Length: 444
Image 1 (cartoon, rainbow, N blue to C red):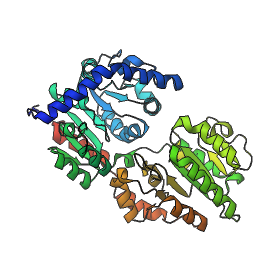
Image 2 (cartoon, rainbow, N blue to C red):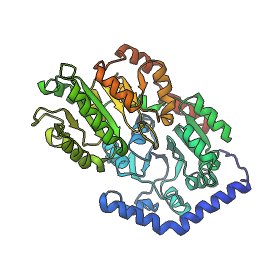
Image 3 (cartoon, rainbow, N blue to C red):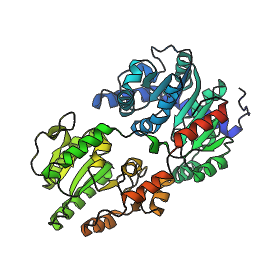
Image 4 (tube, one colour):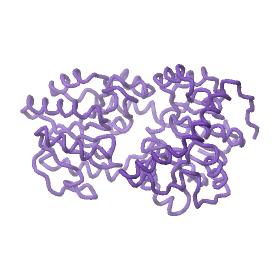
């Protein structure tokens, strides 16, 4: 296999030299950051050697999949299972404990059988990356979604190991930011051996940067397996008379949205007193916010219960007074929370910041979904969903007015199924693209 080699220009050399210098001189700071996070959450600093590229692994040949956190792990699941079935050994790396724990849970059987190995991703300096590559000998590496790590990309190119962006996305907001920064990921992205992207618009964005090998493969999250145990648990809970109300699930609510959503919930509960009075499921984005949101709900006077104290480990009903909010203080159970609802509202897009979180899980369960106006980061899915009438975009004022009307369902299951029919099959298209880019011979 022959990879493209092109002598990088002066700008690239300067940016990369500056980036490597940051790592060289700032390395103690990066380590202190991890240990500081570890004081609040010991999982961050556990297995610290893995972040240096050191592990107990010694693998003659593997496929390296970088799935930074929970969302990327879920997105990669259908492809990982296909590759395992095709005889590959997979090394999955993650930057967050949530990502690592998700992989350990999703692939517990395969990890026990040593078909999959789950470790922390090394720091993005050349020595750490090379150390891991020497241990796992990847045939090629797949980077999920939109992680553009300069040293990781460049080391692969220098070692003639293909590195591909998988389920790739380059949001408009990130493009605008990178164009105005001296130090950005932009000059490194074109050193991917190839990119497999979600839609035509993303293909054009990567083409403008100078990426040569581009395949349009769609959104892989629509191919992920729905955990039937979570669906069964939600259906069982809905049989309880305390949940015999319209349920609205708020997913991935970020810090700056918490107070506004609690205010909206309180207003809706005060003004709707008939059979349309909803019960809200409130799921914060970050686990460290669980206790804080619980305190805020208590202070607001809203009657609530926590999933951790009201349901057992199998999501069976234990004890719960009549409530207006169920606080979803758990990880890995989003399908359960969403399937309880008649409508989902996805957070992240109702405030400044990175933008809206994903809506694929809601649509997979045939639930109409509302997102905020800051959603360019998911435009690959939101624009078509809005055009087909299975999603709506609102600001917080519009959202409150919509909820006060009491008509929560704006898209039928049939309409959402039609949307899904046009958006599945990404996993097979990804394997086809890998075959074409790398001359592999995976059978579909």
